[in-house]
Length: 97
Image 1 (cartoon, rainbow, N blue to C red):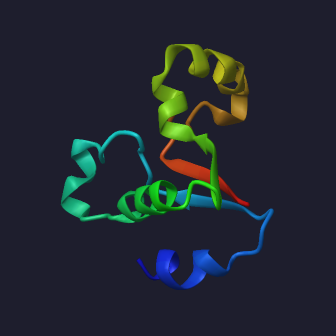
Image 2: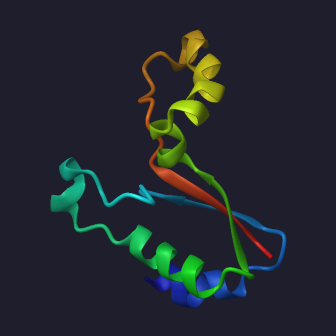
């Protein structure tokens, strides 16, 4: 939570921020529950409390779960060097306004 309370409020306008281990709008997957992560709860609070300051750009897990959106990025997975990369997204990109 240090990031959300002491860093993010001071990031200048226009900066694009990447936050890892975020599965919004869903909760953490079952296989991650024993890790006690909380990044996405902090992010959700900031997005809800400050909609004019933080703009969601790319909710990767949501994109990977949505049929229409995931079909847009499907060609990326045909790149040979990416064959071993997991196809779900576990991160979230926002822009500070």
